[in-house]
Image 1 (cartoon, rainbow, N blue to C red):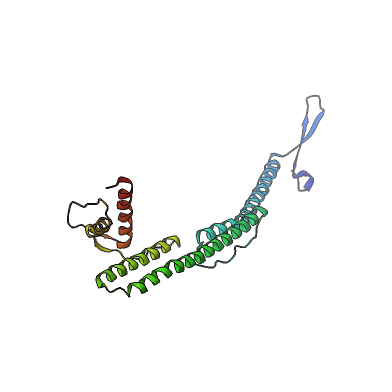
Image 2: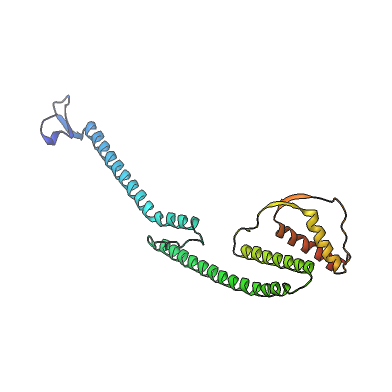
Length: 232
């Protein structure tokens, strides 16, 4: 023991032997060794915590562009003009953001071109229908004129529903109660007037909820294919 700094970390031992000689030796004290170990452990823990905090901050900084990319992909809509995604972050993330912006621009350009083409097709299809409607007004037979006008109106409705489907929207035709048997009877009568071997048997009424033009087009295709390929 001792007050001097030289003795705080050492243990000095002197032993007198039987022949009167002395054995002197020194050793580091146990308490000083334990104190040194706890200091190193505390410093190691501090360094470890600092490294973890820095790693978490770097990870959040590196993955923030990826989160922005995921949010932009989830909110992608053709009805809005989105803000271009910021091309920041690591090189791989910047490349992914640049590719996403390019892809979104291509999709919007393709959809815009398709909408313009559909508008042109709609105009081209309506022009002959309008001419037929004007010519039907010159018919003297009122019953025939009403049938022609009804067919033309149905054609316009089919064109509208088809164009809406091609635009990716939902059909504007309302769902309402329909007598499906009457719809099929009308189709059967039209085929019978054309000389086809078509007959209808079964229940006289069948009420369903649906879209008239869509159901009529579906049954017209089914019955038409049956007449064409099955002859009756």
